[in-house]
Length: 220
Image 1 (spheres, rainbow, N blue to C red):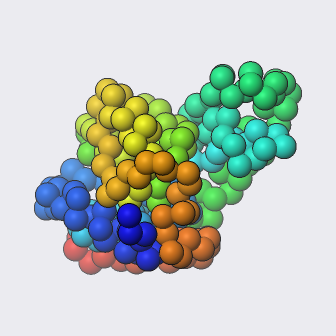
Image 2 (image 1 turned 90 degrees about the vertical axis):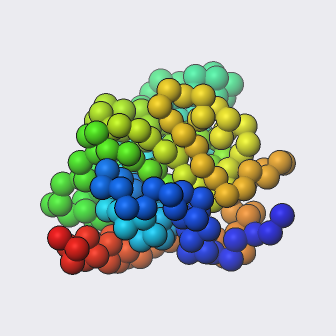
């Protein structure tokens, strides 16, 4: 199975999968920073839709930080994996410390990316949540949980590559449609499906958001 050259190519290919949505005035594209934003930028450009960030932070198991025991999202929503927490014997105090640290980082990123600009209104909108890939789906689940409190018309999770199991689980959730370019099995990790999976910087995120805002402003 061919790899994506980078996040830009992945975003262009993903945009083709949902190109039928172009021209609608109820579309909002939300990128999960950092890595999801370059992908989301290409999707928003192709659909001529507004672009914003929706900040989600993974809650890593203490001592095994790459393993998610949950996630938190903009607006205060959180999703916890009780199974993982029990399996690794994570005590309540340790969990609270991880949540507090990630909450502080979430707030820092929101302020840095958006400044004083309010979030894009998603009420009665078709919201396309974009990341550069899905493994366990913990981050996207937290985003979905938070977004549903804002009364969107529909939520579409769109990613270039995802675990087939995670895609199936998301599709079974009420009101959620999952779109991906490829769902390899075995999956292993998102980064394996990119030739260039270098880290996206905060400055790149801010630059892409500014360019998207200029496009929308020019149309207005």
